[in-house]
Length: 211
Image (cartoon, rainbow, N blue to C red; front, side):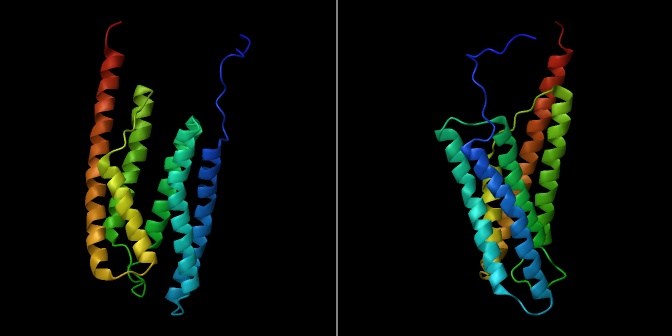
């Protein structure tokens, strides 16, 4: 085995941005616990708004620190492979947990709440992304995930809908917000699907080309 090259820089693992991302991930179970107890209080007819406000504050803090870890990684030149994995994982875990917890058709006292069609669209898109990632990576050995305007817009609208529901905003505009989030989520899912198919086709052609 060749000796290590001292002139070759080593990638730091626990950078400042990665630490912020880990704090975001650690905050998700606390958000889930607050939401579970709040939903339980609504279910028994003794709604505890302190738990709801706590969940709202924690969700907002975790969502806002997404911009912070990105800024730290870019400004300090510390974009790492671990950070590229953990950052979207933190986003997906937070949004999925909040979306599922705020979709309770069997609990009509919870108002407003996310409609089932929005939750189904979000879960379907994310399941498609995860499955597509592993399939394309397994068959081609590499994958490129390009951020899409529709994907960023759907994430923003979903976050806004979650904050709106936790803040117990008026229901009429909330319905249109959920419809918009659903539409962008579906379009983004199809775009990511077509991107994956194109990468799969390019990888297959490259593997079968004569050398």
